[in-house]
Length: 189
Figure 1 (cartoon, rainbow, N blue to C red):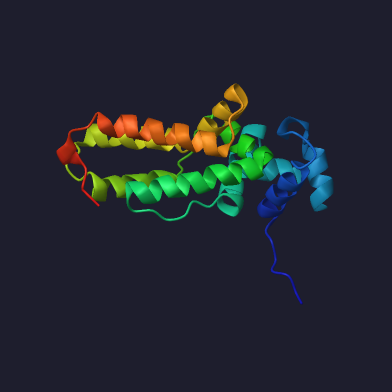
Figure 2: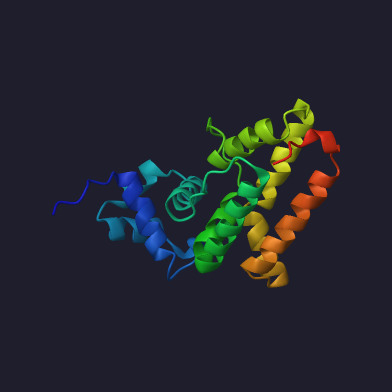
């Protein structure tokens, strides 16, 4: 059976993910990645000129391959999707910490908004159609943070919480945020 060909960039990211099982991101060198993939170190640099580029790409790749967010339309669906995601983070903390760390860097890219951002905005269009633009953006940004690997990592390392406890904190944060909005804003299920 012939395997599907993998492009060089994806092979580098997959190899980095394998190396994360035994090393921290900081301990993974471009030389180790090149050796793992069977390419030159120069090729790794061509694909990812800086470690920030590598970290951002690795985080996106891990998000898509290991932590895909189930589709959601309602706030209840969103909560369930985030709970599932936090349990997945607990099962693969090294991968989740890469996502948390990547969220602290700000590359200058012309990237489209992440899937989760677009999905939250679509949910708000349905669930809170009367929100003004400023409040919709504020709520979307808050929901994005509370559902992030960064939020999970802060509670995991700062307070030694497990996924269940982090889900509870997430639910309380979402409840507090939604309680501040006028009742007429939210569509009833």
